[in-house]
Image 1 (cartoon, rainbow, N blue to C red):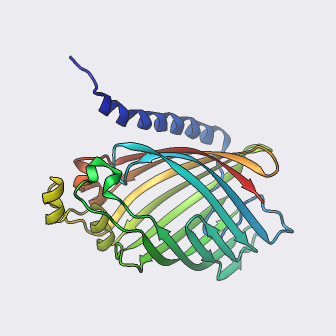
Image 2: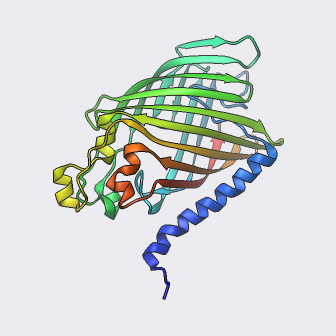
Image 3: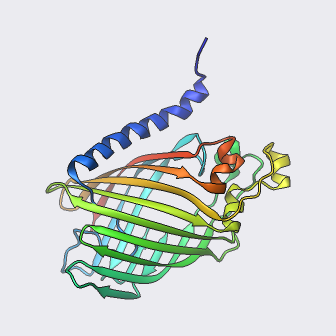
Length: 286
């Protein structure tokens, strides 16, 4: 008799919901066009020209894996905080940065920006998932880095680098991304972005390796994770302007674990290479 346990059903329901939402947004993207994701330091597309400040606050909920590589999902709060001052200093969530250099291109809207970044990366608690028991906790990290981004018309691309300076994971990561944007109507906007993340030995071992002590405590095989590409993914954000100040956004995303991250016992034995997320949030623009 072929039956599915309640536990397994609880794992598949969020994935099915995310897949359904992803299919809807993907169809909309093909039929109507896309709007690019915002790069570090880039002003929101509808920022008023006579305002030095752009401040947006909001919140919502996000369905995502219990940890990177997990096949079980949880619902998390999704706070939204975006501050931009004169296209010079910006705060996006837990990332603070500055546009130290801005070069205008030959065409209107062409722009190259370079600057420093500082970010707080949340850690990982072994109580976040039963699959993490015995792995110990990874502390939250303070990371320093920088970015370079280029935008032309509806297209954008960027590279960000971060290095842990707080002895949490002692690693370095680099993310390469590209996006496209389009206004679908007076109140509707679609943003999409593809990205991939590379990580060094220290980061990969901290998040995906299994030491001898961790193996004895968790029951997983020992595993040494080395540097390489950690993942590649795509996200879609569909924004709807409710009023002049209020907007609502639906988000779906898919990420594929790669290399030593995908081969880790946390992913290959207890999790999944396929990572889905979906969420909904509301923001207010001051």
